[in-house]
Length: 127
Image (tube, rainbow, N blue to C red; front, side):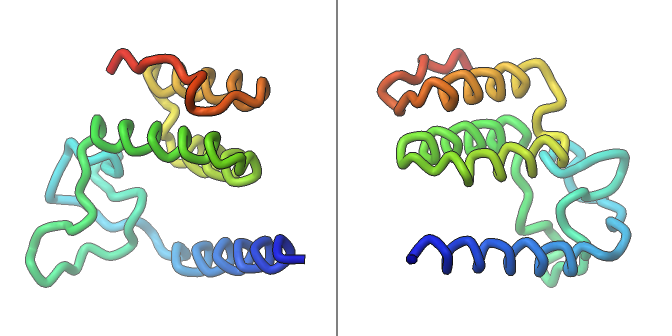
């Protein structure tokens, strides 16, 4: 019974996110090394009107990869395969798995997810 409420709130969050992303992405002039930077535009935010003049969401690609891997490890550890699938699908669509490193991480996650492994079975990261 508690799971129904969680699924309903996740559906609402999905539709709210889609509504918020209805405009074209803005040009990005701040950090070309940001994880969200693609062809001169930000693929995550839809406004670059920052009071401070600096993007508060800036994160380098390497930092983003570390956080992505940590999040996926946690989802495996707590047994939330439903969220892991959703998370992987979202990041694949956003291009997070567009290079060899990320492809390797995605393959490992799929293999361990299918095996039902926990964090204790996770191989040491080479990065």
